[in-house]
Image 1 (cartoon, rainbow, N blue to C red):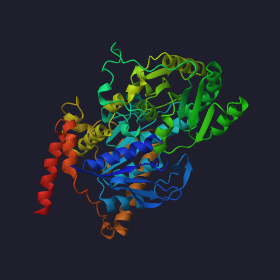
Image 2: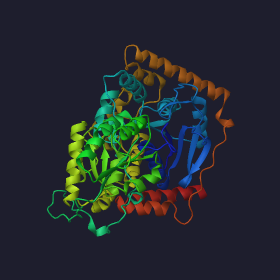
Image 3: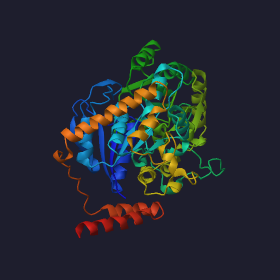
Image 4: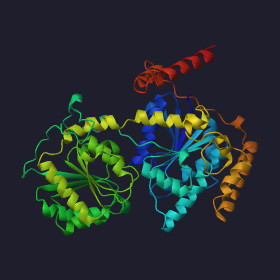
Length: 512
């Protein structure tokens, strides 16, 4: 059944990044499948109010103060009146928050539960347990996820991390990876569709790759935000050593951040201006044009839940050198990647091995694109996310959505952190929050009580009858929902045909 969904996060375009791309692509595919999706994010320079993007995707840019890395200052309660107005105007049924460090995400989930809406949270990052920032973030996450209906993580490593940080039952956490639009990341020479690699990466039947001569220049590409957690310090230390060992190698680096000045100083100190090109920040639509200039993609990240950029690089036909951290080992098969420890010496050694393999013609990078296209699809991500929506809305039977719960599982709904459809009753919500800690539990309960009283106040003094309902974006002529779903049904074993029949029944009831 179709849903009215609000995607809530501080991370969205025009800010570049993996979370931003994930929200946009997922929203577009959900719209293609017949759902209504709106985005709630903060205002950017020159972008405020309501904007419409491709496919009728509506974006609400809320004018809040941005304090750090495009994250807004936590307002706790002052966001509620605006949020409630948007939710009622758009007749939202499910609120889907993204990113652990997004204030808008956390506040939206709390307010949505107060309003009696179903909620989903997607975690895109990994966090530790020892430093002060991680401890505070984890406590905030535990507060928010105490009363969420379901959680999605982008990798199995991310799931383990989130379950531990927020004390969740693993049954209420699903793993749905990111994806890429492979057609937007094509190599310069696109192979034919019948040249895909064998299903078994260790098969001996492997097409020969083009050899690179000993004097032919190999270009190493880096596209990343220049922050500490992205391994920029490792990159700064490794570049001079790599270039000293391999005279016919050069670097192209695209990205911006606080570490950019350190990178520039390293280039000047080692006089590498003719071998290292700094392009500055690159828009997402420009990333492919940067990547296709190279042969190797270097990704020295210190922590990563998924790493969409390495999938984009492989789709462009680049051999990937990356650190074995977080969820990165889950992303690509071993014949597409050269792994290294997050250490300077190992990154230099791994890059050297990658250069040697390319010069020897042992890596058929020209075939990567077709295989990546088979691995990842946003249509598949949307279908799996839609199944989560069906599960929390009661469309799917409980035993089917939470396999293995068995008899008596319905009684789990009142228990904090257990898999099951969460109750909206205030007393049950307070029980779940109270279990978050001796002092924190009491503080969380106080916040929820104030939020509930604010909701009652708004219902009395700003009644719903005074809020105009927004008109839905008209459906495309020529290729409507039936055709879109029918096409997807071919890929999903008939799911599309069932949805199309339901859509026709709704149209008949509405017209009748």
